[in-house]
Length: 196
Image 1 (cartoon, rainbow, N blue to C red):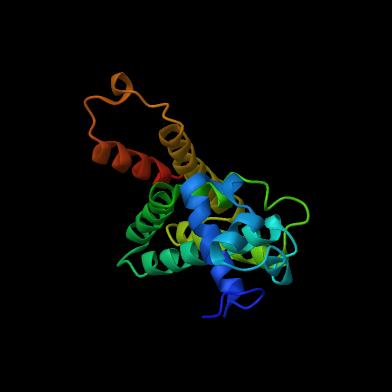
Image 2 (image 1 turned 30 degrees about the horizontal axis):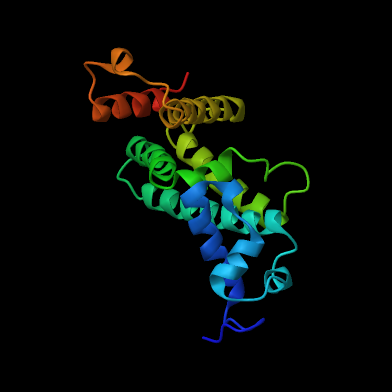
């Protein structure tokens, strides 16, 4: 692969991959187009042929993260019954948070989905939300829209709050003992499924 000047094979894909690695290593704030160009052996102007700025590149990384999450949700939907599927969906969300914390922060704790968000990112985030909503709706097909939305948001909030406590290192042994980590995780998942 040529690495001189602007030539780098598929530079766009290489930038997204390298930005994703930088996000995991140091968080979204660690991503610099100049540093990525240096790492990939291209000129500092080369990344701008593919991404207008750092935010645009991070939006692409986040959109791919939502696509991965959606694929995990689709696998969860194959569970034998709706409750098992929703449980697996919750596990997929927790898995993203704990296995790829940098990407999780980029997707859920940054302002990328705010005003001016790229349509591709909004579409990817919406697809993931709709899969989560569908998993919740399948539990009680007779529930009205407001009820399903309330259950989806409160269940998601339970998971997200637990993630924030763990990642913020707010949980201490005196709070959790005698529960094991696995027992605590199961309790949170069960609570997220509880609905009303």
